Length: 539
Image: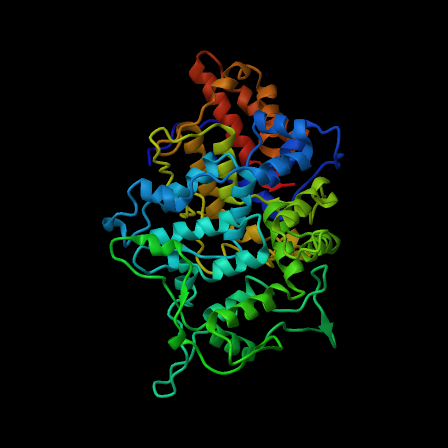
């Protein structure tokens, strides 16, 4: 990384202290109507439904309305798949069979440059629910496995939940990550038993959760105690169902098998009758047929709507949705209005158009802390970053001290970067029992690392990606107007008048003599907006 440029505005320690105030909750202003939309309301919607609100994006929503814009995004064609891009750019060559070269560039290519912002945002959300991490793929052609998995999530982002569940289950990456690939029937002579890893996580994390829920997401209780959704016996039985799956061919020179679903080897399948969640799976069924019964059972469980629906709300709109909001989304999951269960297009629409999504909520439970990746991608999209050489060499942003402390598909565990039920201790959120998953990434190191990294990239770009601020040079002479513009585009005009005035004063203190001075004002204004607690909390 190049050395950081000379600093403008307040020192990093001051910015870090200010940003850490965000760890206590968010503020807000009043709700807005669904028609007669203001630019601020549209920008706020776009920050939930995608990553950024450019002038063109805002104009498109004004022209079509929220629903019309969603229809256009749902219909937008898929851009080049990750796997194909990796092949075209030489990452499927023999020399890369043991590395992840190309995976990060391909992800940044899509997150920053792909026009289908809604699909990219939802696919990113799925990657944080159906977690596979590059930290757990010790296999040949691991980079191609990761690319193929990203394609699975993107291609099914708006399809059916049941299809997504099966595609993720049979993907090679998931097979490696949670040990379903190579899982075999028990052997009394050697003491081998079926691996229970995927059986546990597919229930705990990808479908029904650990406790039974009412449709509004609240815990069902018997005698005052939560009711578990599954037992150890269910895990053991499901592990038997999941035996026999293997890569569909293996090649040292051609990674094409990594994009094909795993295939079943009957001789490795556990014999006998099985029972999962009180559903009998007959001994006569083949492995694929038994898997179908098990996945149907999970997908049709009453918990899925509130369990998955709540997590989608958390990833797109707010960290601590009300039970009524969860219930409305879960009801759409259960029935899209045409009798279809698990229609993800309808669920995403319900999440984004709900009255609670469109109204600005008050602290302590309103909004969500913007994830570091979300902030970075928003800046990149807002200021037209493109990869001049097609390299998209942003790299791994996981380092919390020098970068963002978060990077796509690099979760440290299957539990994602943060737990959906996390409540920050020793905080106003904790006192009020407010779930705020993203705050698991919020600490002194990540706040300072984020500010320092963003100061560098706002000024200089990253890799072969350079920001374009030329359209704003004429506005730089008016610090108030400049700050107003960035407060609108980046926060949906969520900054208070006092915060905007403070930033404008700091920006205005930079004297203008040359275009370089104008550029310094622009960079300072962007950084200070993105450092403010009122920006960091997406309301």
